[in-house]
Image 1 (cartoon, rainbow, N blue to C red):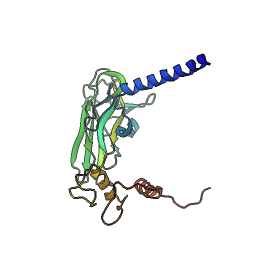
Image 2: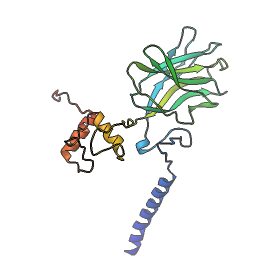
Image 3: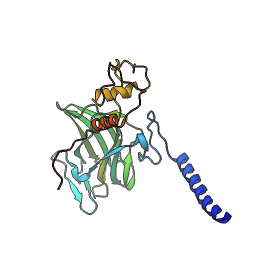
Image 4: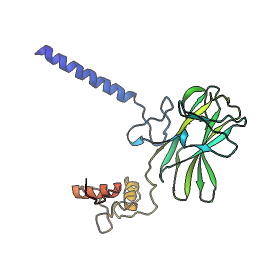
Length: 259
């Protein structure tokens, strides 16, 4: 019996030790720094998690008529054989309020610097504001990311578009050894900044949860507990939780009977 207990306890202790070691070794990032882990691929956990908008090379078109587009059907890459290089452009869908931190450029670039990627905000009047610009580095085939978080928030997505441009430099080889495959935009959601005036009497601007309570109120998720109060310390019933979640997630059912 003693040997059996030893056989059971030892694996458990070893597993606990391994989990503890992994937890200590796992990269952690605060909202303030948001610097990339090593390698520079922006992997994060929990509340720091990113959504990735990936744009295939098939979504890109030539920026103008002078750019000749060549595609490699074997591995889905694009490039141009024009002696003056060329540009490829595509749109990207990013929700309002999202914060863009990293842009990835997938390419094969044996010499380095053959491609660069730019991300722009373009309003309805055609005014252009650059969000990011960086060149590819020397590698056979890989993805490059900017090394420092951009921390650029998209305030609106109405009357504005996100445009992505991949530029093939004139110095790039013209034999197809330099080519690009995709662009990735890594973004995360953010809570709106707190207003200057409090909505509820019992959640003043100095309250530690002020920003988050105001976000719930502004989005229509909660109207408080009555008499101009929010009751931040009151317990939450399952019924109230249903209201919060349904409004926050926008739960909607069509009413169409199932098959």
